[in-house]
Image (cartoon, rainbow over all chains, first blue to last red):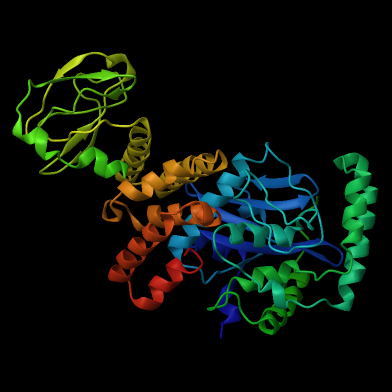
Length: 233
Length: 194
């Protein structure tokens, strides 16, 4: 079993650590968490995260400002962490070739085949959490057993809010009516929450048991919600 | 088997000593069938005689010449033997190998991995599976750092159905890593990359 206290680092502890990559998680809205990947490059930490539709954000040397965020100390071997960091840089280099759409349903899309993002035929895009899952999957690491991840009633509330947000921001982010319709049709799928995806990387065995991920995810959420909101879209 | 074609010594050629000259045509050495001792190919024109040694051990010295050297004749380098036409594919693959080894030598893991990820991803996106298979075929895993080998396995993992020689490459890496790390740690390094 994982020692949760030792796996959750604040920004100062993280910067002092020898970690090469980490999943970061923080509060981005009143009841909304956000996650992404931090990776070391040229002695600095950069963050990559899917902020919204066609909006893959990259923060160079930005990590020291993320005081409201927590960093999960991954159990993944340092050698594998180097490759995950390289994958993040590769995805960034290719982002002009294809913007990453936002969507609810995740069935295992990844970033390696077909040039940029290879989504399942049913998938419309990624969330911030499934973006992280897709990056790790592209590196051969399945963070969560998606086949056995159950739908929860509260998922539909969040789905509905996302569809509304897509509608509200369609002009600003160039979101087509067709895309909104496709995402709307994905409502009712299982949701992978940012805190759960972040937690999934710390277990000794990956993917860990879904119940353990959810339990630690709730603990992590409680810790994050106590921290000050730090990032705005 | 490209590497074998290039590196195997033709016993017939060994018997007949021919003049120590050969020519380069169409970017590759073509007139080397009769050579028993010779040198070979490099790609960067700024060097004088040969440009880049790709392999140097007791039996082989393999190097590149440039397109600009096409048609030029060169003196042989003694103690080196090969007897088949070098294909352009072989040259490209060796260039990739050479570049990885040079970057490793410079000691920057990030630059080495970025080169591996960019190069292999672009080859795979262009469906140049034969080149990647040739790479798996010619390299000796012992020449590479573990980070590089894991990087190659990582960037090729989603394409394994197209890469017939990747599994054999994985097995070599598996044996190497298991000889260097305890079993549990070796599993952590390789899990999901088979």
